[in-house]
Image (cartoon, rainbow, N blue to C red; front, side, top):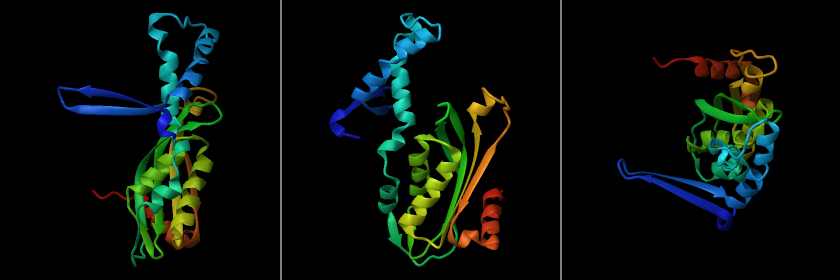
Length: 213
């Protein structure tokens, strides 16, 4: 995102010392919000009533936040914390929270991602894997493509002996509209290299379902 176009809004709470900074591209906010008065009218609302006066701008900011993954480069996120290491056993990061937007209806889907790789001379800082998940999730998505993009990014950047990704999500386009099945969960998976082997894949699946309790 162009720093010259970023609008910063700082809100501080003097009681607890907490300060929150949101960064927005104000030109994009203005363009997106300009459409929402008409949309509210078409929905049967009065965009001039008190509760809706700032709704177009709020929606525009929410959409920019929910799709800020377009401004991120997942490969660079991984490269920023790659280290040479001779560890060659499975590395698993599970229960990574996923929040994304279905590209078909622009309704949220959310759940968890489980990611593993087997190093081949390089490891990566553990926090970078959830960041890669978030970089792809914070875009208009379908779960199938999201799963593959995470897998392919880790495989091409780290060049490990294999990558495994499993994502489990609930889709509001299924529970709030359409088929209206509130308890359905969609599971997708993608594997490369050593994880194509049934034994290795079974170990990964056992680890992501196991409890440490």
